[in-house]
Length: 158
Image (cartoon, rainbow, N blue to C red; front, side):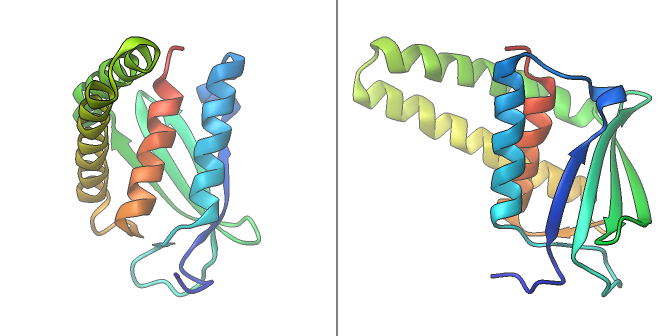
């Protein structure tokens, strides 16, 4: 378990840049945020002021992570190009669609094979996110996976 100073205690989404989604999208976003807050390791390099709050926005077609202290004061903002994530998000969306279709009609072995591919792609996305945030944010693999889930939920068309 992460120490209480190296973790996220809040995540907010900028509604002006991200907007509200349909009920399914909002549900996926809420689950992603809940999962992140339940268990995470998150810190700023060379900063001992946690716990942290994270505000996520889309600014000029970039993913914007604004890290705030627990009292809400802004500590740092990082902008990440979405370009390296586009193919992964598109592939992940396709495999998720296949998975949900398979649940209705495929054999357990087929469902398991698709799910293994889905998990593998999710892991690749988490590794990409960690690489893109290297030196900017300190997070563990599971937190990176959950943040990718949130990134995906922001793009999901439903």
